[in-house]
Image (cartoon, rainbow, N blue to C red; front, side, top):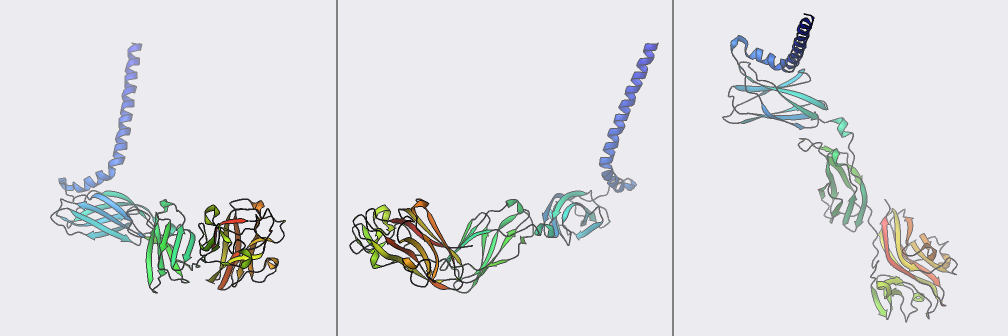
Amino acid sequence: MVILTFKIRKMKNIYKYILFAFAGILSLYWSCTSEEYDDYKEFTAGGEISYTEKIDSLKTFSGNNRIMIQGIINADPKITQFRVFWNDKRDSVAVPVTRSEGIDTLEVIIDGIEENIYNFELRTYDDQGNKSLASNITGVVYGERYQNTLFNRPVVANNLIEDSLSIEYASMDLTTGVIGTEIIYTNTSDNQVTTFVAIEEDFKSILDYKPQSTYKYRTVFIPEETAIDTFYTEYISFTPISKPVILNAAIPFKAVSTAGRWGILEDWTTTDPIKIHNGHGGWDEWNGNIFNIESGWGAPAITNGKIYQNIGGVQAASYILNVLIRDTNHALSDEGGAYFVVAKGESLPDVADIETAENVLAYKRINSALGSEYTYRLEFTLEEDATITIGQITTQWGETPGRFCNIRSWDIIVAE
């Protein structure tokens, strides 16, 4: 009997546990469906079901302090309006509906809504006040907080040569919604032109830019692919400086006349002390038609020789003259020496006056200790528009071994 009683009690406990579990499941189901159940209770009051068609295929389209919501209905001719609820039904909007014979798209734009993430509930209604089951969707509204995170795409460089402007851009984080940059500039016909640079493009080339004019730009953002509004940064204005152009400035250098290995450089002024190779010098056929002032190895000495080029109309700004050399054997211990020079006006100083001449804007002494394939950087600033002269001046030995400096290129860039 003891054993039998124990078994009966054990079975009672099992039944009790099963009952508790079933009650829990039922409670969970009831909590998940209570809202729908309340709807059905209302619809079935009096024993008859009366409700309108539920909106299907909901979509939201984000905007700037607004949002657009779309959905479709296709079966119920009785629908006369639909309503949208948000903020736990504290806010709502009603939209009239005129039904067609087929599928209709219902659409509403809710304006003046604060930036946030919202849960929207939509229901349709007939003229008797009967309503549908709820359709729900989540949507995002953008505004000032998003706007304050936006910044203009960084510009790496502006390169203006005559009326051709090239703008180089840095990359950006695409998750910000950036799609590109809008530019407004004045062309050579004095007309304002608006152009767009997609975010996928790193360069923009404008071939009809009016020199010394100012352009402005702003960066464009769409926070989501389907957003109905576009966001913009504030305009930034910029006046690009025209790049001073050096003619005949890189290998292969051109010569106006030659005598064997040696020649006279085209577009450059070469003084007589340089012309020690049968009336020629400065242009060297060796090493790919290079720029080279050379003495020795049977050639006479050079005293205060100069090769230079005038550049007019250089705007007031800061610049860098870059001179790339292939190799040289000039030493700091040399008497006289060789220099790269930038001077204001149409002439260069004498070698002996390089350190004291008032028109000198920048100079660098050529020195083999700096190594081969070296770029000399001469930084200078103009306080007003002016003509400048750039070039090389040198006093060289005439004995063996002589002196040389092979120059690959000359270039002036605008210092940003």
